[in-house]
Length: 266
Ligand SMILES: C[S@@+](CC[C@H](N)C(=O)[O-])C[C@H]1O[C@@H](n2cnc3c(N)ncnc32)[C@H](O)[C@@H]1O
Image (cartoon, rainbow, N blue to C red; front, side, top):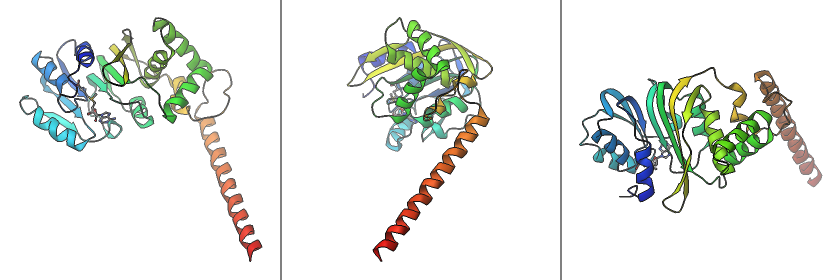
């Protein structure tokens, strides 16, 4: 089985629910080894709401066949996470992405993730930033602007002075879970195939006032911020207007130039 691998099996056990959960969300892949283990250990309450996510149609088909034997009424979301609308607060979720984090996914986590008091939420993603504009943008943001830089400095210490990349992912999670406080356990780096992965566990989640100063969606902004963190909404709006006007001017200059070229060649 594809996900039945030594290190994956260890990390899968590490993120099993700590007790019976009512509203859960899983990325079970084809074999649903995580869901099956939790069911076997009586950790899924069959009176609750349980969501399985799989964006690949073929995988989803095999997954449905694989979980037939589990007497729980699962809801399958056959699409990307970023299109999911949550109806209930989750008390358990494992965002087991096999690849890197995308801007859409990160924004969904920032805006749409709903967690109940005391929830457990875990993340697994690829260690490498590769060619991701989004992740590189966030990385620059985190090292370039005061409120994010402080967050990364703290996470660097918490990551056992281990690794700037791990500190980056811990900071990324802190920003995405902007409406929540939580207890985190040591992030885990592991490698069970070609890719290196990072696993991060957040427990005992509590709601807090949103940490708006950690809005990572400014990652594409190439402006130098004043002391006190990212610009507030008005500044963001003004920046968008300036950008739109600059684009309009650029387009009209290009059109003028094209017209002059055409005229010159007549
Ligand atoms: C790492 S595998 C799951 C392994 C499984 N949790 C286990 O313990 O064995 C991740 C699965 O989630 C799907 N997936 C990854 N990112 C996704 C996304 N953003 N939206 C929907 N499905 C996604 C992939 O197609 C893949 O089948």
